[in-house]
Image 1 (cartoon, helix red, strand yellow):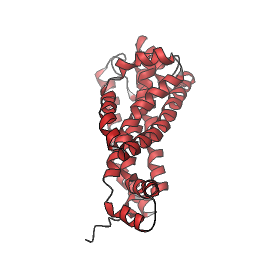
Image 2 (cartoon, helix red, strand yellow):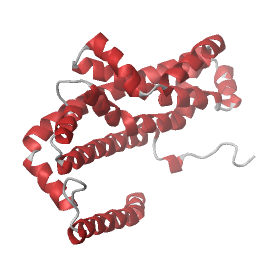
Image 3 (cartoon, rainbow, N blue to C red):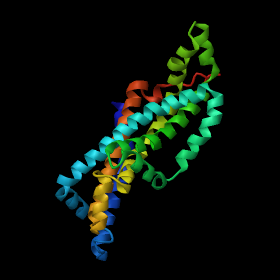
Image 4 (spheres, one colour):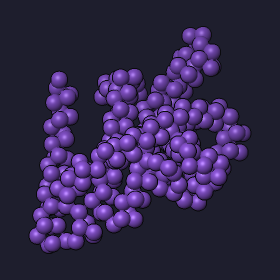
Length: 261
């Protein structure tokens, strides 16, 4: 209870800052008589969200499905790729630069290829979300495994554990905190990636919904979709943090074994 109370207290300044920002935003738009096509007031955005939810909700559901499935694939393949690259220095040296180069390409430059390969279907957006989401997880998996102190392996091997068992049950457990850092980075961008891919070519989803709002110059709807993406991202990051806490326990409970040396 004390830790929960401390976290709530810690979030109070953030809540106050958000409320103050929204109040200033609302007052500025109202008092300065800013055109609704330029920027919408928070109250207008909220009203537009409620009025258009019968179409906004289903569009958000499509993007949420693409993002969540792509994210789960990214976590699995990111960790697997990281483990393989960690175990094979030759493969790491040969393929890792290509993987890094692929991640630097802007989405707009490769989206046409995915449209050719997958068409306008949801599966293509899932693949794009997976490809762009797995890189930070793979990188943090490699770095996390490389940072595991050698004595963990020495103790496990001395107790009769095999190298494979030591890798999956010891090294990955020790590196898990750093791996979760990559997972959180991936979660922060997965829905934005999916919606951008939809914007470039899809039949449904928030990207198409945003495109329609832009074409009709309905600025409040653009903000509505943006805030829905932010809300979905926040929920996914909370889920990632919760899974970390359930699987690994509170971070503050872990002590550095080298602290007393």
